[in-house]
Length: 253
Image (tube, rainbow, N blue to C red; front, side, top):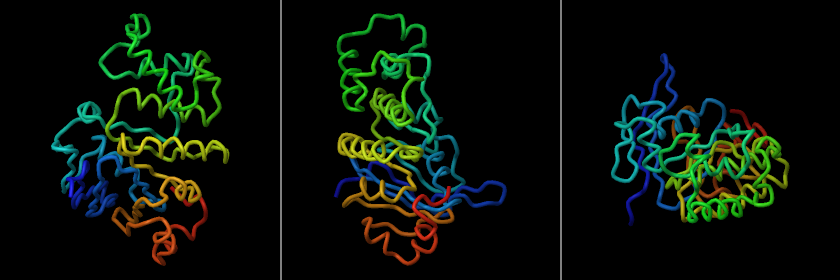
């Protein structure tokens, strides 16, 4: 059995007496796509904060490969290959889709040098590859501000991919999307599994069913692990239905 790429063991995080993460243990395999669900206050955002160094655990272990994430700063964790996409897309709206990806290419650079320096052919090829993957090749020269909401989400996923991450943390990618955009987003994330490891936080159960398929789903509740398993098993679990699924398709944050 291979060693998991991400190891979270007995992690606790408290804010002003409130235990946001409670003795959480979580393992992710190399190339795995894992969906994490849970009701309001379950600890999903704090979980991502801990993985990216935005917050530090009070107790417990977080390891990515051979690296102890609890000892590293945010930028150091990012350099290890952990990229995070927040729920609200953050793109450079006045720059073209192409230039957004150009700015995101792996390596240290200032915005000015990134936009004025001649781009290498392999870098241009990588941008074209990402544009095709996120289905934005026809809009490469448009300002990102002209994209529809779903297209901005795809662009931001592309910007993460330009950094060549090993692990992608994706927060509610289907929020605010049309049904067609949601389905295409699911196809995109599934296509990334294997080459990348992914953790996706989501509330839309139709979307979760699409991307989970025969994959493991993790349910958080009150900062701890409520259960894990295949989507159908999780959906049928009485405890899950009580604390989460019974609250509606989209649940609460």
